[in-house]
Image (cartoon, rainbow, N blue to C red; front, side, top):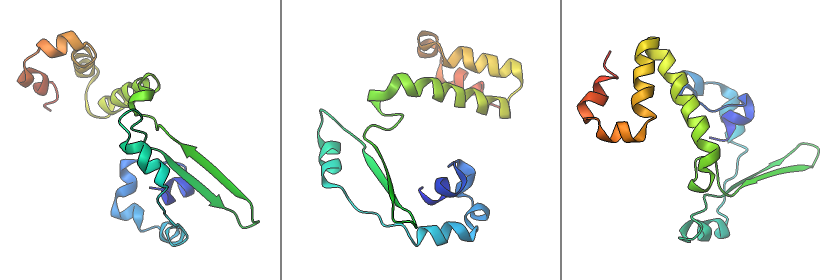
Amino acid sequence: MVAVPLIFGHLTASDYEDSFAADPRIDALREKIHCSEEPAYTADYHDPEKRSIANSLTLSLADGSTLTETVEYPLGHRRRRSEGIPLLEEKFRTNLTRRFAPQRQKAILQASLNQQSLESMPVQEYVDLYAL
């Protein structure tokens, strides 16, 4: 989950396929990675007031300099819902276009993005929208 984004600039589902993982650069970089626990992050994760999911990454470069990036609340955390929901909806729409005709996409979106309508819809009716 670190080597692939550093090499390719992304991490997607297909990056977990055996054929993709066969790239020797991935294992070469993995050999250089050291992972350690930051006790304060663990404490904040268990703190019910925070429930932080902090992570930090430090890159030590060949010239001796370092770059550090820390994220206390990643996208998707409940404290960042307003940032995450539009991206999640965009991902949902993108994946619908990969599988369904425009009319079916519209029906799925109408059902999915209206909470009141969705809650009143029988489960089997909603699931049927995804049948090919």
